[in-house]
Length: 108
Image (cartoon, rainbow, N blue to C red; front, side, top):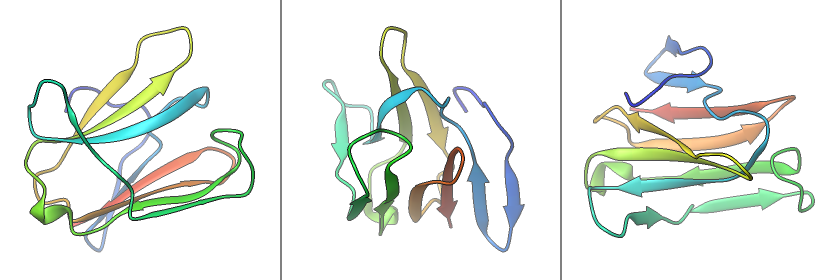
């Protein structure tokens, strides 16, 4: 993993973690090692407004087994460097939700 911020919890094939810091302006899921990076568009996006991250309801990515490895979560910030986290190779789906903080959960 390129870095870990927050806690990782493992239960019934799921991995959950609050990886990004609260002041993010967005996230990107990247597949492979391309230049420029190949980002994966979420299959599901629901917001209750336009303030990131508090107004996010869910962003979801499905069928990630078909994506080229490595899978990288990029946390984007305003006025400071982005952070990158490499996801496990057996990741199949991921969701980003907000509940008093960002929760990023992946299933195998």
